[in-house]
Image (cartoon, rainbow, N blue to C red; front, side):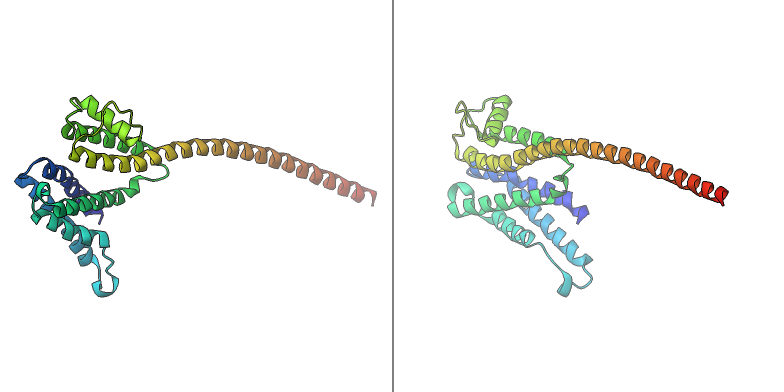
Length: 242
């Protein structure tokens, strides 16, 4: 599973530009169909690999239902007619795009740990850069990469200044994904930063408590040592008196 994680992720990522090429062109290129087929093949191979490693598949195989749905759906998306001429094909590829996004986030969940602030910031920056490039490609009003990055940030942050807005069906659909990703990624980054501050304050409080306990234990040890000396001295005085 660890070995196939990144090949499956790369194959699924290739379906993203294929989905939008289907919207932009009446006759999509062959590489778009190949991207869907490659992603379906990668998911199928990952499922077969998991089944092969299972000692008793009939009793212990726990295949990911999402992978099964993706394998079938990506194959159907590859053979379906162009999205520009078929509403059913467009809906199918749109659902596959949503499931692909869920699968990719699920595969990267190990990076979204409590101490993974660096990974989250890097992921958020890379994601916004990719979204900016996507808007630059899909939106005619975003004439420069800077315009695309600005549109990606305002869309992900749900600010919507109105200076640049999505105007084509492809860019409008793309903005839906950017908003969903923005809710998730930016919320995680904000929560990680807040957690880091809270943990810093907690460490300061813990150090103060430990310092106080150390001083109290030192004072208690000194008092016990003094009591022992008094007991020894009193016993010595009794022995001399006898």
